[in-house]
Amino acid sequence: MTPTPRPPAAALSTTLVHPAGPAGPWWRDAVIYQVYPRSFADGDGDGVGDLPGITARLDHLADLGVDAVWLSPFYRSPQRDAGYDVADYRDVDPLFGTLADADALLDRAHALGLRVVVDLVPNHTSADHPWFRGALAAAPDSVERGRYLFRDGRGPGGSEPPNNWTSVFGGPAWTRVTEPDGTPGQWYLHLFDSSQPDLDWSNPEVRDELEDVLRFWLDRGVDGFRVDVAHGMVKAPGLPDWDGTTAMIDGGHDGTLGSEDGATGAGSAGPMWDQEPLHDIYRSWNRVLGQYEGDRALVAEAWVEPMERLARYVRPGEMQQAFNFAFLTTLWAAPDLRAVVTASLRANDEVGATTTWVLSNHDVVRHTSRLGLAVPGSRPNGIGATDPQPDEALGLRRGRAATLLMLGLPGSAYVYQGEELGLPEHTTLADDERQDPAWWRSGHTERGRDGCRVPLPWSADAPAYGFSPTGATWLSQPASYARYAADRQRGVPGSTLELYRTALRVRREQALGTGSLAWADGLTTSTGAPAGDVLAFVNRDVLVVAVVGASEAVLPPGAAVLVASGPLGATGDGRVVVPADTTVWALLTD
Ligand code: NOJ
Image (tube, rainbow, N blue to C red):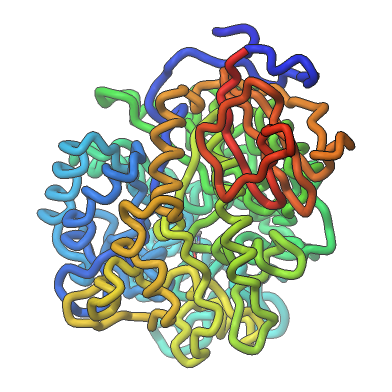
């Protein structure tokens, strides 16, 4: 371990939070790029992205400089929740290709030096899974029903749901079945859509089956798994009523609350979340991964707080990483960001885990758009044409600053497809195009996640901006995507694509991912006043200065700019000024 980072220019005082570490397994400092298969690249022209389309574009990711790819689900599925409803865990949906296509993707990625993480959806299956079909055809108390959470209803004739839980997507979390003899029967639990019945993880058969699924994909060469709803598989005994919300991806604060303690607003305290027996499952999975060569990783999608509670998923012998949604959900405010970064590093260091950072994914409004809202960083569940619209230019400026801040932090970072192009959310998608079950399950009060899932623009002048050879797209793309197309940005100095490429290269050269974090205080404005709205830290030999808001900060003498998220200013005596909503990395040379 390198005990202390280089002291910055004399005028700054530093507070060490996290020391640099030695190089470790790849996932400790990896930048992992999330591919959402339906929207990345369409090889066959049906308007939906597919595995051959991804394979053909992997060069873009190698050129970008990321270390790994995480693929959202591509398994056999009726696609009621865009593939997070799996009907066969061991096969590829024909929409996306074949198992041979998956093998070809893995081979090509590995040849390019990219690791591959696949999604695992263990909380629920699709209602089309043979197990669930068998359960519907079987009697109450049968082996088949025992794989899921079937219960008798309450009230006269069992006509009321077994408890008062609601679905994360809105509406009740229970659906009543019609028994094979035609009578109204039991109810089954679904924390998400009714097409996603929850498995009963107290059943050893369920555990054995999913471990076998892990082995199936490990045998094919995957480097890890992103575990969907990793905090939800086990429910409290007796399934007690719960008067709180069943919030997760749509449960964020509305921008009126700060999150100085790293709170996501996820409300993870309910009896459906974060139950102790989960950890035994992850210890067992860790042993399965350990039976394979190389370093394989488990990544928890766990909306759990506070941070110390989340860190329990990445204790030795459990998972390797957990998504840091507290960072994603923090408002664009320097004290809030500083608090969440400190809390994240401290909690993970306590258990010897790496800290992750993420700003965008397929479940949230893209960060360039969130940061252009009236309350920057607030998190509506989707934006529609009649909602207040983000300021696109301001959002992009802040989005680039937020990214450079994120990539300067020690740990592992996630990049969601299209953010390297600075893509905004599609905020005017026609409501009749929406496919997210959250839109209709919420009674059309939550627009949902389609706006961040729009197919990528590759070439400004091609049909569907190069997404598909026929011009077909499963969701329509806004006209603005032409300006963001990859071919308009590649090789163009100052473009967002080139900013990401440069940042990823410098991050690697300076070993920032395994680096340190010491807060640096004492920066001033060009008039010599203390700089407000500033987040400044030293990571190894690099000073990262993020002006989070309308202020400015002057770089200390001897700090040589490596990367900047936007244009910089200068003082009369030639010192560098970092303006509002801008981040800079500068090498400390004295
Ligand atoms: C979290 C996934 O990221 C989201 O897209 C999905 O709808 C739910 N889990 C249910 O699987």
